[in-house]
Length: 127
Image 1 (cartoon, rainbow, N blue to C red):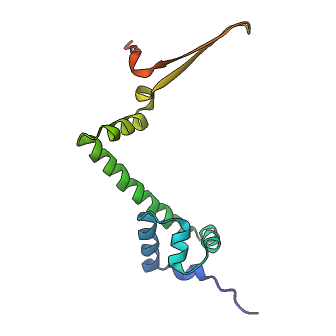
Image 2: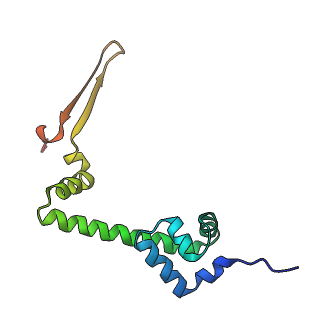
Image 3: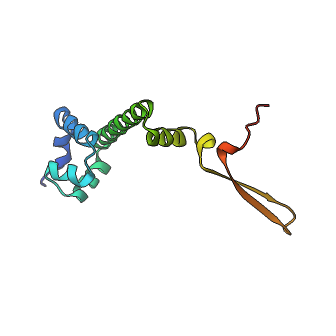
C-alpha cells in the first residue's frame, strides 16, 4: 500500500513556516498565500485544518499585521489626526465615546419609552 502524500508536512519546516508568517503578516489573503504556496485556496484551507502548526503560524502572522496597524493608528492619533483619534477612542472606550446611547424604560406592558442621547452630553455619575 502506497503512503499518502501530505504536502503540508513540507510547509511545517521552520523556513517555510517563517515564510507563511511573513505573508500573513503582510496582509495577504488565504487565496494569495495559497497561490504563493502553489496550491488552491481549498487545499490551503484543508491543510490549515490538518496542521495546527500551519494554522497557528498563520494566526500569528495575522496578529502581527493587526499590531502594525494598531501602532500606526495610535501614532496617527497622537500626531493630531482627528479621524484616527475618534476611531481610536470609539473602539477603545466605546461606553464613553459612542455617538448614541439607547435607553429603555418599560412598565406593565401598557407603555414603552425609549430615547437616544449623545454620550458626551450626559453628565457622568461620579458617585
